[in-house]
Image (tube, rainbow, N blue to C red; front, side, top):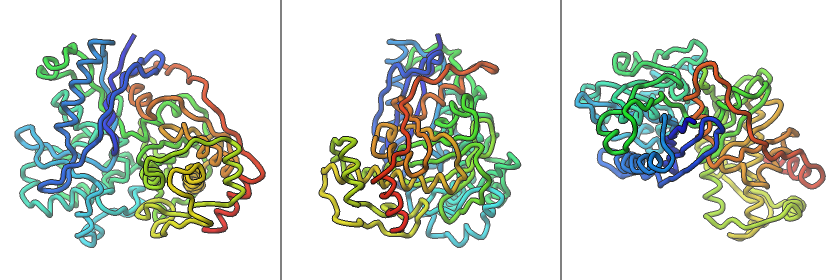
Length: 454
């Protein structure tokens, strides 16, 4: 029996999950908020706080269950600059900081075109290249202090093993640094003068190494415990389906971001102005994708006051025509620069009407993203929205497709654990999942009305 400890650093929470590789069941999971510290020199992630939390949880998991391997998955748009002394050369920038926007014209002059990278031009630090460009401009001595640039999953691997690397799925996550078709760095690494600094691109399943002595001392783990390279979180959600599912299909990874990834769909021209992009999956293959900040929007709409509701309640809300139009967060997604508004009377906070309408809104936004990526076939929901009936029901109706939902606590730990699977092995079969089918009547009328309103 192999137990894989999955370090899962999302934008909202940092988690450690223990996954049984034979069944892909989560044996244990703990989490803490992913805090952003204000600076100086810029807003940055509390990596030392996360590190202490992770090591403490690993020690507990190993004592109670045993840990045989470690894998890492994190959000994208993030890198660590390792100094010559082995520590960070600068704090790890929060990608929501607006600093890079201050020199946007200078960056736009050197960034490669969408046709080369499949990365749309995004605000703040959502293009990793823009982050690095701004950091080097803000701190002219930073480049000289930097010995290596690693993508974020590999930062945690570096702290565990001392080995530097990047992984292809993180480089392929709208960084501007990667050419997904050629499978190599873009010209931007030369424009930023980091060709000698950025670490070697590796497969997500490559083994970084074994544990450093101080990690062994703090956790009680075997020094030979393998640590795998790691993977971008949305692509971790995608990997189990790439290994099991026959194309065409799409995976919707939900969390702070809703990421739509379509495999084997119809040919379509991606529109960078609508937040479409090309992701790179764990096997190194390009995947048409689209996204919006759905989890953040959900929290903004409901403010923690979600109400219980029934199937009849969903139909009644659809009949009243109460709907939310895009966008709550207008800096990203398929309807950028639009201001959200309610069509009909805005439901009160904590009401079932507001809760259901929020699920409908997020589903219709997701359906729009699926259309932009050329989706056909089955839709698989990973992450928190898998437990939202109004979202799943409306998504099946709006796309006229079958929707299948994941039963896991997180949408990423299963895929991140799978990168520890021995070469040539097959993943265990998926557990039976709940199915949603397209509905008719008032729900179809609601879809038509929402689309007409936008």
